[in-house]
Image (cartoon, rainbow, N blue to C red):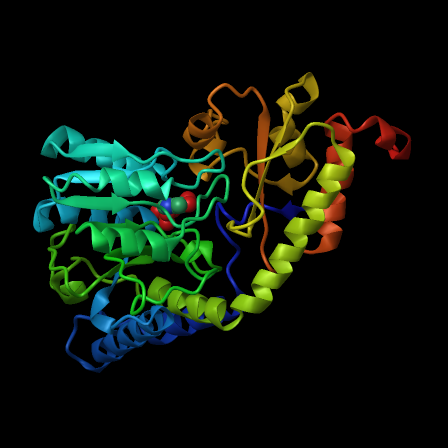
Length: 385
Ligand SMILES: Cc1ncc(COP(=O)(O)O)c(C=O)c1O
């Protein structure tokens, strides 16, 4: 049996998405920039996909630009707002994805950008009062870059609140929504956000394709120079099959949002209850009030048994993660966990669920886990080794 509980790293592709992509591969091989019939048809398919993505966010089609994924979109929001919108200061948090933090490092190095970190609570939620305090200094044009849902611990930002704080304090607001796109409704006509990002592979679409939403009031220039594709905003022949797959996946995600959410929340609660029942001294790394519902991040007390937990889970047929996908291969200390729990020597595992997972899979994982980590004394006689 193989159980896939690593859906925050990436998701399997939905059957309907594969079908839409296959049809595009068979029929739409023309270059969307060619003026003949096949080119025009390919262009129409891309524009149809743009309309779908824009509708999902209540954005206008002119505000959606296709990219290669979350990393590129975040680079674009940060670098272009410094280069083209006069941003001189960025307020962010230490638990952002590396594609945000490392981009800011580059901007600090080459563009003299000032960077301030907002305080976080122990679950990774920003202190909104501190954000307001930081924004009192308006001597430099400021961009607030705070992620919506944290990929490692599942903390959730109050998007509306931060948008309002930014608006009241003349700051631009970029949110890395790579983990939440397709999981929470986002209406950009109501919430004033300047940049948002999406990556298809996080919502049952293909890898290597994503988009950026750029609020129409902001005039930025391409990060990637080349041809006139993406209305002069990103040179290079479009990834038409990826774009078609992404639009289909996002449409399905929003059509089935409540149903998927309910199922995933149920699985998460089911697994959490079992972990609490069976293991001593475990710690969950996000709040139960407001959280990214696909993520269950749990820390086990240090022990010889928990040391190779991720590897042992994999051998038992279970895919989970120790931190973000980028660091999990090497099992390096996660910058997110270090920022939130600096002195901890606990072993953290991130289980992340999809609507395709089942309670039987949770039962299987629990059965295996009980053989890998010390269980509560009251549970020992129930285990068959
Ligand atoms: C929060 C967050 N931002 C950005 C990214 C990068 O997205 P991509 O892999 O599509 O470049 C990820 C992917 O792990 C993520 O979880």
